[in-house]
Image (cartoon, rainbow, N blue to C red; front, side):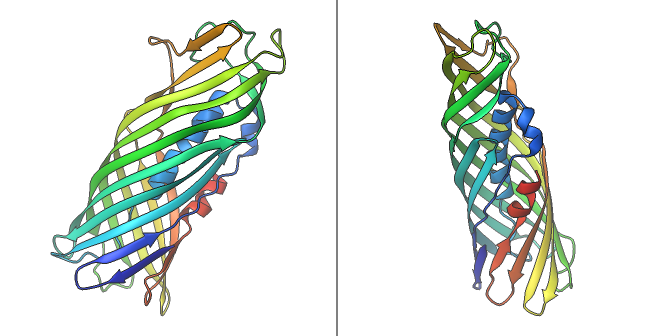
Length: 296
């Protein structure tokens, strides 16, 4: 939901997005490494979906500040990511066709979940003193994921402010920091020579990305006092970064070798969105996350 009030100098925006991701049936046979990567990426995508949009047509020589708040909940099999995103942005028109936007974003997610079963593999760990891969029961999923970003963008009005359909193209760059801390779960092997063995699987990462993005929105009239706004965005975190694994068990404690292969996070992200706005009150309902994540 987006609410705005406009004065002679500024527009204030309040945004709430609820994002729900339901695990697809195809995840049922994936190993634990794939599920963990999918969960981490879903939280990153939630932050990217919450990035600010210009709150109106460009106003030459005037700053248009906005404050965006979003809540997000994503699920990948038995893993849940629950958090919030806060964004501050300032847009300024250089002329009627061109302007720029400055933004800062912070996201915080708690990792939790119920019980689940998935194949436990030795990927990215080298030699492991267990009979792997084997099915394992996972419990007590826990951890945190933090996301900070600052950046700027050029804003181009594709049609005039008085056009029936006003459209904007936004091209920018973010500097992002994603910190994954103590993303862990307990396991118990179900099959194989070591059936019944227990331990902990943990992931950590501190990733810094330079992230170019391009987005487009078009405001269309739905009724005399209502608009609908289709949106599209492509974003590419660079370069992909390591997600280090640690596996403990009976008399061993192993981590991803420094010179070995690693699991990586930081995927390209393409999404289509949709919002509905009320001209008189400035109220906007953004359903982009609700539409995208169930189908992801």
